[in-house]
Structure formats: C-alpha cells, structure tokens
Image: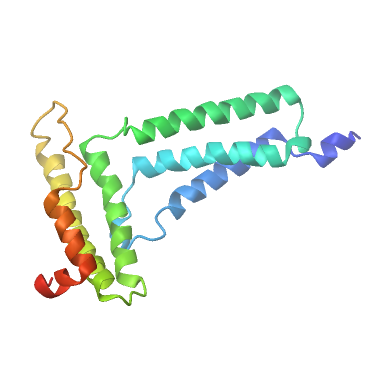
Length: 193
C-alpha cells in the first residue's frame, strides 16, 4: 500500500471541506442580525463568503502542503484560489453584481447588525448611548424604507433604467459640528432623541 496515499487526503475531500466551510460561513454572516426577518439573501455576503473560501483554500493547502500530490496540482489549486479570490474581491468591492434590489437586500442585514450591536452592547458613557440610540433609530427607519422600496419595485418596477451617480461620501461641516457636539457632551442634552 502506498504510504503517501494513506497519510494524505484526496482532492475531492479537500474540495468538499472548502465547499462545506464556505457554505457554513455564508450563514454565519447573519449571526448578528437583530431580527430574523432582516436575514434576507445578500449577494454581497455570498460573494464575500466565496472570497473567504478562496483564502481558506490557500491557507489550508499551505498548512497541509505535504499531504497532497502532485506538486503541479497544488500549484494550480493555489493559482485558481488566488486568481478567484482577487477577482471575487474586486467584483465585491466594486459592487459589480449589485443593482437596486440586491443593494437593499444586502443592506437590510447590515443595518440589522448595527441595531443588534447598538441595542445589546454594554454602554456606559451617555454620549455613546446617545450615538447608539440614534444609530438604532436611523437603521430601523432605513430598513422600513428599504422594505417598502423592495415591495414597490417588485410591484411597479424601477422608476429609471440609467445608472445614477453616487452622492459624495464626505463629512460635511454640519456633520463635523454635530460630531464635535456629541463628543463635548452638548448633543444629548441639546437634541434628545
């Protein structure tokens, strides 16, 4: 009997291990949602779990390098994992596959996690509690808006078909002033929720 074969693990088993772990990771990404009705299918989370599967493939193969033969196959697997991981990461970072509905079904669980963390954290500083409560309020409202928009788009379609430019992701002067007020302790007293 071939000693190398006895000590090693087949490629099919390796692929099954990676696929199973990736599948489990996808569902674990929903572990912190505040409410299970917020756990909508998220294409962004699916692609993220595939990126992690590619990284896991490379890491696990590196740690178990001696268990697999031949070297050519190992190099091909590493190359596919690297190229696939970079391609999927690029697709996800650029939101290439994300349109109106995919955006909202990805953002609802994201907002829900913000609610969960804001509601359940052991916060002691009143400024942080105010910030967490404001985040909760805003995220609850935005989830409601997204659910209404999803229903409306499903029933009546989009109101436009041309891509719309994104607004700026910059801190405005008013936003900076509000942040300074929060840190100084003025905002909770002056602007209660």
